[in-house]
Image (cartoon, rainbow, N blue to C red; front, side, top):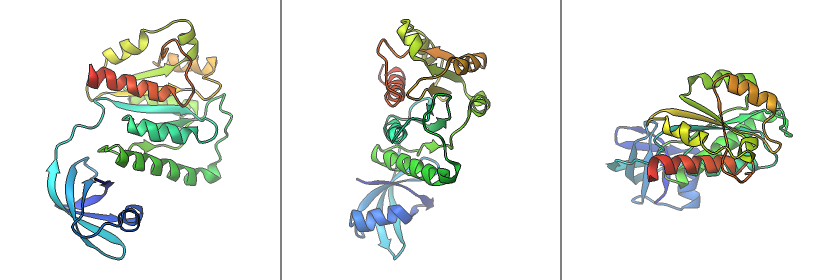
Length: 246
């Protein structure tokens, strides 16, 4: 059954814009069809389409549901701006795996340069990808995708997190394997984790030095060297295993 994020007033949801188009034009639903709706408070309801107008769908709540879908800790993924559509892949698959937020990072070794003039359009696309992936994976929250930040902005932003780590391939080459486990063991349900990943060329030594001086822990992600689009998914899978499957 299809899931949509929408605003509600009491037991009525109002669905507009792209989701309206998806219901009416793509799925060709009619009055009486059932859907899931999720409001801003992350409450999920099984609903019946009550009526369809020229620009909105009105859905009535049949049953409010209790769902434990989200990761027990809030994971923000900081990705050094990669080439091509790799960041879109990270956002889509990272949303499916439970990420809470995505923060693109203008790293020293990022080949891609952030174009402020095209920034709003690209940011809107990234957030749309997150929303669609959240609906597909039956999340109760749409992860936020932030505008790219520079190193000093990232350091300031990180001050509000309970745990901060850097995935660093040089540590993996040296056989470091304990810091990620120690970091996750030190966290409790409801706390926040900020995880930094470099672009294709990795994170520079100066960036590592500055981040570690501000409380970041350097972690290896196993003995294999992972691509920039693979490493965040590895981390999210490890978090899920640690908190949800053990």
